[in-house]
Every structure is written in structure tokens, then in C-alpha cells.
Amino acid sequence: MPDARILAAELELAHATHLANAPERELAMQNHIVALQRKLQTAEDENADWLSELEKATEEAEYYKQENIALRLRLDESSRLVCHYTNFGAYIPEEFKMFQDYFNQTPDRGWTMIPRESYLKLEGNLLTFPDFRFRSDSGTEIDVELFHQWHKTPLKERLDYLEQHPETPLILGVDRVCLKNDEELKERFQARPGNFLFSSFPGVENVIKALDKKERSGGDGTFKL
Image (cartoon, rainbow, N blue to C red; front, side, top):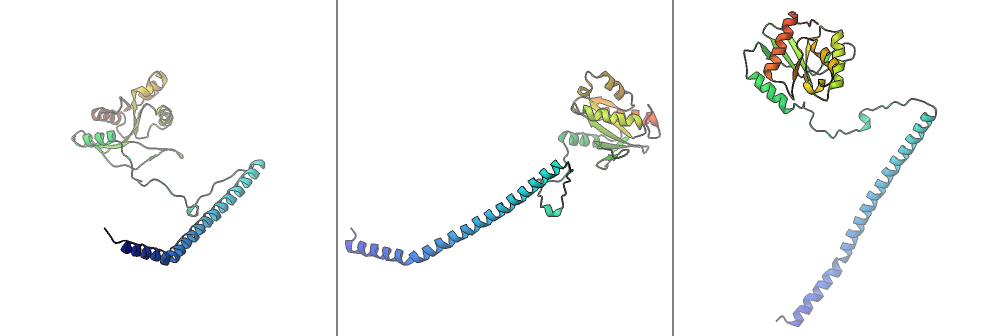
């Protein structure tokens, strides 16, 4: 059993050490409190500046609204906007990859899938984004644009344009569900040689037949209605 005198001496030493280190601990705590106060003051100042700018912008917006003055949003590098997206690469759905792989594995079909620009410029400021481009052995190049069941309105717009510009080297593939219970739209769609129907996603053979039909309809790379 430890001697009581030894325990008492150890306790006295610990107490003395604690008292000796007290000023250092007190100074460290004070420095920490000062640092926190500075951070808090900085945050409050920034918040006050933001609230002031917001209040000013709100007052200006209300003035323009009352005066019926149109507002224009201007953004540049000084706006410090940050995009939360990190991947800017083109996304290719899995079914498109499967179609491309299977098409490339079936040579001697008379057609080759070739790279294309991201969009096809139409008349005026209109743009369209075909899914594939093909080149025949004779050199004819044709774009193919697919319309799924939720693309009925864009399909009508594309048909409107193609009816006015039948020379456009573009054929359309449409999901059958998109034309369901709409005979007028179906007739317009079927009036263009090369257009084809599919369910969920077109097969390679279906697309090749459509390309052949389109090329035969023009011969020189144009459509004939």
C-alpha cells in the first residue's frame, strides 16, 4: 500500500503544476475567444453588406416595376457564379452505345456510321440534333433523328420544317406510341420516304432499310415527296 506521505506529495506537486500552467491556459483561451469574435464580426459585416445590396436591388426592382421599365440581367466573370457540374462530356445512353456497337459489327451493309457535328443548322436560327449520321458506299450522307413517345410536339415542328424543305438530308425514326390515335400526324410522317417506325428503340436492319429507301427516293441525296 503506497505511503500516505508519498501520495500527499504527488498531489501537492500536481496542484502546483496546475497553478503554474494556469496563466498559459488562460492566455490560450483568451486568444481563441478573440479569434472567434473576429470571425463572427467578419461574418456579420459580410451579411450586412449582402443585406444592404439585396435591399438596394429590391428597391430598384420595385422602382422599375412601377415605372414599367424592362430589366436586363447581365452576367460576366465578375459575377463569380460557380457551376456544380463537374462532368462536361457528352452523355451517350446505353441503348445508343449498343446500337453503334452492333452496327459497327455488321459490315458490308452499304452504309457506314460516321462522326457528325453536335447539331444540324436549319433555316434561320433553327437547330436540330440528329442522333446518327450515315454515309453510303456511293457517298450519300444522311442524318437520322429519333423521336420517342414523349417527343410528339418536336416531331410536329420537324415535319413542318421538312415539308417546306424536302431537300434536307434527314430522315426521322418515331416510336409507334408517339403516333397513336393521331392519324393526321401519321399520314404526314409516312409521306416522307425513309421515315420509319420503331418500338422503344430501332434495330439496325430497320434503319438500313430506311436509309436504302431514302437514297432510292432521291438518288442525288434529296427527298422526293
